[in-house]
Image (cartoon, rainbow, N blue to C red; front, side, top):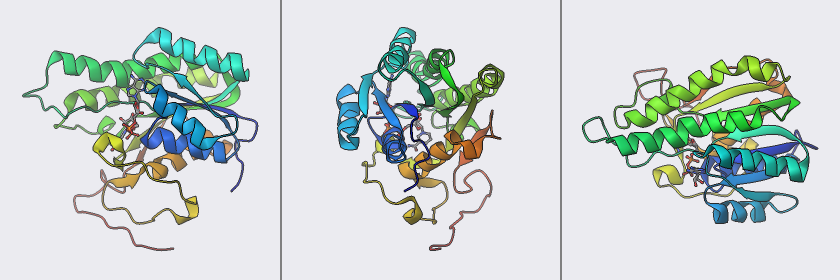
Length: 256
Ligand SMILES: NC(=O)c1ccc[n+]([C@@H]2O[C@H](COP(=O)([O-])OP(=O)(O)OC[C@H]3O[C@@H](n4cnc5c(N)ncnc54)[C@H](O)[C@@H]3O)[C@@H](O)[C@H]2O)c1
């Protein structure tokens, strides 16, 4: 393994499971000191324990402004720097189409996904390190409509607009901000179990149209946060195995 993030400090929200867990493990494998943040503190603590070393857990409710401020203050108090923020916590809920979605569900989805991202951005912007990077998890549903869950799609579209609108503020600090827009990802969000990490070289190159693994997304988050992606900011990066590119199902070839 390379160590792209030796000496760096990474904060990952939604780190108790799925994409956030995979990213926390991979950032740590590549040398970062990771703070695993989640509403599910026990889950975040388990991930930090699984990682070992100087990884640790911090509680956050991303929907709460003050909680985000406290999370970042905790990182600065204990590590003294923040190089990478992966603002990834999110909530899908039981998909509700327009006919059944109610105000409470809409408000909850927007509070966690969109306002949660705003809260995270507001908390990290004043302290992000020169050369630092923020990566935010939006969704393919942030680029096209999602009739099964319009609240979620609206919130994820909002995240993309927020990220694009924050480029200058982060550039002024010598930092970048980008959004990830995954298609379907096999995580607890859609009822799949968390799985062990594998060598990135062994990740399946095959993807049934739209579906990927948490580690597929984590690897792109790491790359976007790395200096290799230094020319990229303000983007909404799709990772969807051509879900939004073709009418016909796509099956990429297996193997090297
Ligand atoms: N799984 C997919 O198909 C898919 C596709 C596109 C985008 N996404 C997005 O990816 C991100 C990660 O989701 P995942 O698939 O890994 O799901 P997941 O359910 O495994 O992980 C989401 C994590 O966010 C945490 N969380 C929820 N509400 C929170 C809050 N208020 N404060 C702090 N933490 C909170 C949960 O406890 C959980 O650990 C989300 O933003 C999700 O919308 C997922």
